[in-house]
Length: 301
Image 1 (cartoon, one colour):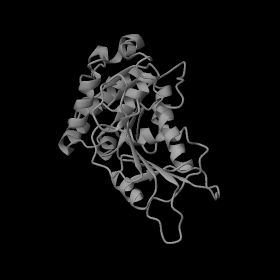
Image 2 (cartoon, rainbow, N blue to C red):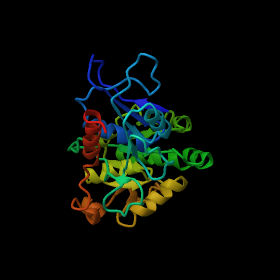
Image 3 (cartoon, rainbow, N blue to C red):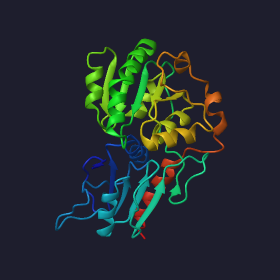
C-alpha cells in the first residue's frame, strides 16, 4: 500500500507532484523521506492515482517500490520516476516512466536500472553528546518463520543488553511489529515505532550506536555520518545477499551475540568506512533523484 507525503494544503493552479512509497518496507520509507527533503517547495498532490471524474491528475510522480501504483499512474498518462530502494523488484512498464535504483557507487551494480548512489539524510550533523541505541528492524520480505524466531528469541535479549550498555533502545521497524511490542513490553528505556511514523534519521542523530537489519537505508545513514554500524542477523534472501556484498569492503560487526564486547565497542570511522571513502560515493543520490523529479514535473517528456 502506498503512503503519500503531502505538504500543507495550499491551493495551487500549477502541476502537482505525487509522492508514494511502500510503508511496510524500511528502505522504501527512508528513500522517499530523504528525496522529499529536497522537494520542499513543490506543490504536492493528495491524489493516490485513483482519480475520480473531474479530478486533476498530478503532473508527475515519484513512486518508491510500489509497482502497482507506478503501473496505474503510467496507464493514466502521469510521468513517473520509479525508485527501487532495495535490490530485486518486478518488471515495470516503460511508458512515460523512468527507473532508478538505490545502489552504492563503491559496489558493482547489477545490470538494469540506473543506480543513484546511496540516499543520505539531508542533515548530516549529530549531537555532540549521544546516548542510547537505535535499532532499525526490517521484516519486509522475510519468511514469517524467520521473523517470528528472531522477534521472540534474540531480539529481546539484544534490546535488554542495548539498554544496559547505552541507556536506552529505540526500535524502528517496518512490518510485523506486534510481536516486537509484546516481547519488549514493560522494558524500561525501550520504544517501538513504525518507520512510517518515526523519524529514524533524527533518532540516529541522538543515538550512540546503530544496530540495523542489512538495508541500504541503514548503510547510507551510517556511512554519511561516518557513524558506527552493526548488522542484525540477516533474515531472508535479500538481506543475506546485501550483507554479503557490503561486508566484502566494509567492516561491519555482527549483532548475533549480544554478549560480544566487540558489538558495543565498534571500529572507528576510518576503520569501518575508510575502504569506501568519500571519493568513491558522494552520497548525493537523494539530490540527484530530486533534480530528476523536478524536471519531470516542470518539463514532462
